[in-house]
Image 1 (cartoon, rainbow, N blue to C red):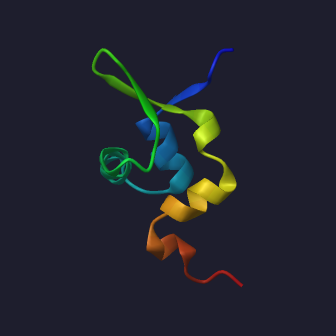
Image 2: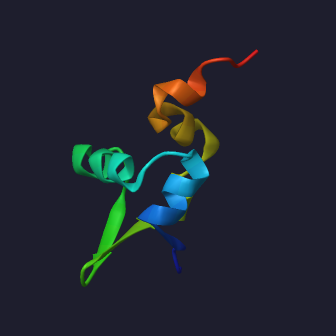
Amino acid sequence: MRRELVTQKEVSELLRCSVKTISRKIRCGFIETFKMGNKVLIYAETLNEEYLNAIKPKFLKRGKA
């Protein structure tokens, strides 16, 4: 089975946060990754909506009605 991979930049655009924030989440173990050479790739299936809400920056969670 082939797993879809996305880059840190794609995830940061999806979450509307910086690549540095994504790097911190990877270092803390919140995001499952695969390293290919000097590129860090993220498994797309780990980025479901529930998971994204848990790691989304706090300023994006405010104001939800």
